[in-house]
Length: 337
Image (cartoon, rainbow, N blue to C red; front, side, top):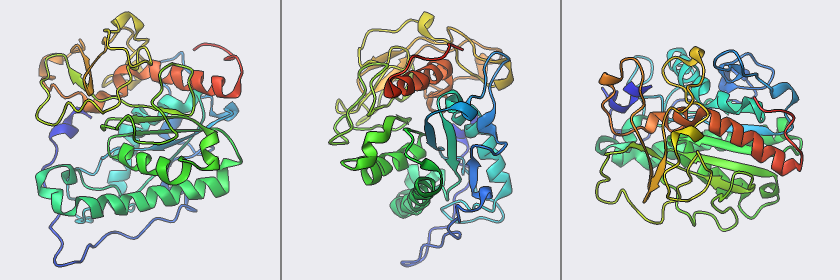
């Protein structure tokens, strides 16, 4: 996953004129167009190590997860700014990276639904994709919205909802909150939204505030992670950006010690969570941590820990998702993993 930060090796051709070619829109009646569904054997059902359990079978809530950008190169059968859902190699990359490392966090708190969608190419976040950025993101969001509406019609049944996302997925989840939750009856079903990896304004929503405690519901959390010595560039430290510390679930700027970190996941998912992996401290518009210690860490030189926004705090996010569901339902947790 760390390679994603520097994997922008090639970009699609710029569209000519007003054309914007895109792969066909997905049909969400087909299970192939979902990366995770309850009852389907998928990577969201996995758990790291040997002490955690997939509890979707008894979960009282649902989790709708929107994955980040995995479309980072131009493949032989896909030269557009939006990924094709028929790209089997890309689908495997999605499943084996973000669904395994991020969506599986939530399988103790809810039944996990994660749509495949025509994600925008990573270059839309760089200069070479600026001219097509909004059209590519709009195409991707059309799918996310269609998948969520399909979920509401066929699966929801009035259950509480956690909305979780990362990076590009967070941009789509932010729009989804406005279109389907903000000021609507469905807003009453929102347990919490995990809008991770992108800057989200504290006042982004009229009726959905930033969470200020671990058991608060109907709110959102957000953070972006950097190494302790990272220096934000111009415009990167906007004081209006919401930041919640995933070790304390507050906006407090005191350093949360690594003793509060119940376990992070690095490159070896099967090895299980590593307790005390990093501390965390809010500074301005971002979250800062120490460099984690692991075999081969001498090669881990980036100061941008974006790809590890969830992984560094894996167990804390898992525990918190369960905690918020229990608070929403007004029940005591059945046990602690």
